[in-house]
View (cartoon, rainbow, N blue to C red):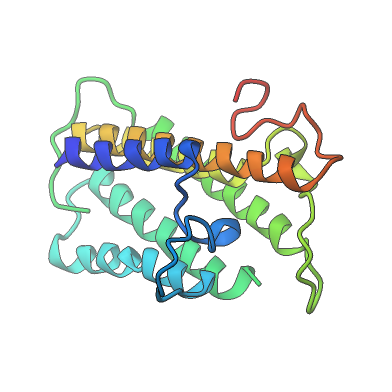
Amino acid sequence: MSVIVFASYLNGGLSEIRGQHLTYSKFWNANPTGKKQMKLSSRTSMLLCYTPFLAALASFYIFPPQGVRSTFLQAAITLHFFKRLSEVLFVHKYSGWLEEPPVDLLYPGIVLFVVGIIGNFYHHCLLSKLRGNGEKENKIPKGGLFGFVICPHYLFEIIIFYGISFVSQTPHGFTYVLGVTFLLMGRSYATRKWYLSKFEDFPEHVKAVIPFVF
């Protein structure tokens, strides 16, 4: 399962770099096939994508937490997806006992998770303020880390999942976060390329997702 998940996300990231985009947000009309296709709005698509929040919430009843690690892991996953659902609705216009690992990354994981949650939410708020009521014009985001990377919200989402991976300390958690990293790096690359094509004054020094690097 871990290999399948990793391979799926890796393929997704590489597809974004090749120009075969997931059709949402700025790329909702990408990859035209000439055939009639049902298209969903960004809000509807994101609601469907982030409903795992309900499964994570139900896990508290189905698999009662046994220890700090499992409690925080379930809570972190639930909180993250609940936050994303809340952002979709209002901001944008796991299981049982775990064996303690030899090297405990629980608390570093908690720190990463909290930093990621705060940073991700903050930059989504900045994005939401780009357009006033009724405005549809695209603009170059400013504020926060937008002066260094065009997708800081993806950077902090990657940090969130590294935090969850540190808390779980399982092979599946590690391969999952690697997959997410490749996918969001690919998406960020495509997003930066899009901005470069649309705005002549887009700053060349602004990277895709990792400041000064990529």
